[in-house]
Image (cartoon, rainbow, N blue to C red; front, top):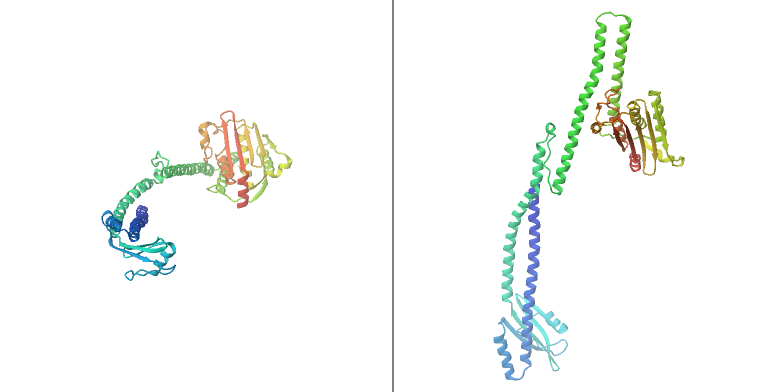
Length: 462
């Protein structure tokens, strides 16, 4: 059963239940109201009967009799009985009355009671005349109450059926109104595939759940389209970057094998082959490390390291790569807070990420000064890397984390465009945040932040 039918059936079922409940309540209240008013009429008749019985003046008896006959509405199958009470538990019994003993007992105890049998009511109550007590019983059939009760039952029955039929059409209308936006979204989604990820669902102006679903789906399409574009660019650029050194090596070898050549030419050719092979090796290693971080940037951490010691190890590696570098590391924390520097991590990968960022600062500042500062508190660990190099143009910043992307002003420097994307994936793997602020020709500030809550969670998971 589809959702539209489920909504219709549910709405009709709830309507049936509510209609039935309302009908029962109306029927019970209507019947009780009829009973109350009819018993009130019997109560008035019993008082008149008692007054007539107690009067010894023929004129007054005649007056009350005419009042009862002409001034009051006639009762159907009316019966009147006056029974003398002899003691607390005995009275003059009338054989015409076929009523249960509990009825009489309740009258003697409470002074008043009624009994119903086949829509005929008997009301009995105690009256006192001087020192003598009497039980006055008035009986009559509530034909009008029965007729009105049957009438109201018919109204409720046919009205209920009519409302259920109406509820069916209202339920279909409600289901159509609720499901149509979802059906429209479904039809739109069916038209979207990998070849037309640029298509989007029409956005709605209101702020209901359907508009939230539309916005969420469009956001997902934005991410998917970006991922597809990055993947396509990655494959194209990787193919190009790998193909170039391989082609150069093959061509160089083929040329050298065509004929015998002097030793200096062989040496020069081997140097070219070595250079291209080294480039190919470095590029392959970078790609493997990028793959090692995983597609979603998640990898289990294994080590507990001090971030200050890790920074000093990175500084030693930078000194080997750039012997004349001007990198200075500043540790902004007190000795008693050194435990705040512990971080669960994959130490080799985290060293690689920070090394890539600092190396970029050295390279793109033409070996100018690079300032690395470390601070830690109860909430976070923060590493700031500040250079005064060539900076990054504003239009290049959104593409910094795309593999193989290199800005125009960075093209003159040797590189593959993999360092920063690799660093970003490693830092994200450690639940950290990488922020880049840059201004062209003025320098770049790269900030790495590890939240203590994220660090604790990572430690627990590992």
